[in-house]
Image 1 (cartoon, rainbow, N blue to C red):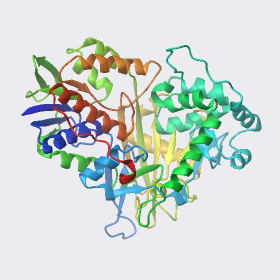
Image 2 (cartoon, helix red, strand yellow; image 1 turned 135 degrees about the horizontal axis):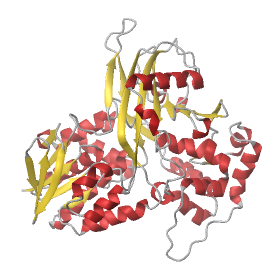
Image 3 (cartoon, rainbow, N blue to C red; image 1 turned 90 degrees about the vertical axis):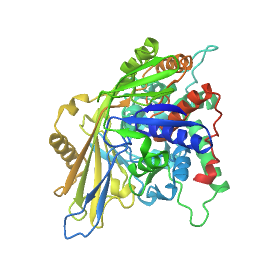
Image 4 (tube, rainbow, N blue to C red; image 1 turned 60 degrees about the vertical axis):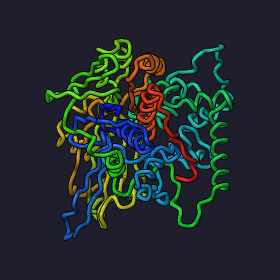
Length: 500
């Protein structure tokens, strides 16, 4: 039997492992050994249950997500794998009846105008009446209709930073009060450095096709409305919301993946110190002094962790990996009594632009956004700190981070009450930064890897940071190495309408 060694037990590594298991179930003579340095699998997908020990509660729990609390519903990989692993019924749509996003601007809170899609308004009245933007800012955003699209030379790579693109098309105010906080809250990235081609290529394509972001998003909104009419919800179907989570927390999904792939092939609590190749045999040395041999290696770690491992195999790949920076961040979840918090919880959360010079990047009202995240009479909130523009804050202790986030929530939102508990999750160099030149680095990694039999890389450092992207990268890595053995695997794609 051919053995594939998978280094890293996050979404990418588990996606690879489960694909190998499915290949074995199809009758192919393949297996895997997954190695994860932490005591559990799931990587940054981490959930915790906190018992409600206050006010005589009996058996109720908070469900805290320490890393990603959801995935993009429109990407089918999680749906597909959840269905195969038997946890699709546990998918949880957000509570759209309470959907509202607040943005801090000039010290005040403003509701994001209805109809905003990504960075552009698609409804006139909410945009015209919002206090989020000044009238000069609104007029400048509207001028997007008359800004000519960028001219490209034949064969030229269409790329620029997010900051340059937004300011060029819609003005500085759109960047400062909308685009930057949205990117900071979701991607923890710096618009001054972000490669648009690597992060939001649809914006570049939209400009070339429609000549305007406003025209492009109006067309996109029309298409969404047409699809809703064409495929209406059937009785009993769950609502199709923009983001989806799991009722028992996101970790329930990765635990199900590990179960489905086979726990007997997963080793946790041990790190990889080196990898080497002798002909077609790969050897992975572990920090406990043992070794694992196999016919292929999939490195499913962050780029910075993969770089020293592959340097002995290919320096060009290692150099490209070294060119992918990462930032450190943390989430701080805090529970309160609902009758003490003193604010309107009918919102999904707040975004804090860098221009406001706050320690808090964003906060999510977790128990509003996701039903069942807090017991009756309690609420759960989550703050985000760190990111590329404020790495210094991560030098604080957990207790200090809790104090900083709590102080910010009180100052920005007016939160009152004594916290019932708090949990801090730190993600050291956990968010890859897709800076200018990123796609070139990724192409180097992929092209060089293609020439090395039995080697593949996977994870969020390359072509998408979302959970579905990571799963698909792990699956592609398996297809790469099995294809070299002339093993033809079944297609992973399924009809999206069937799993939504």
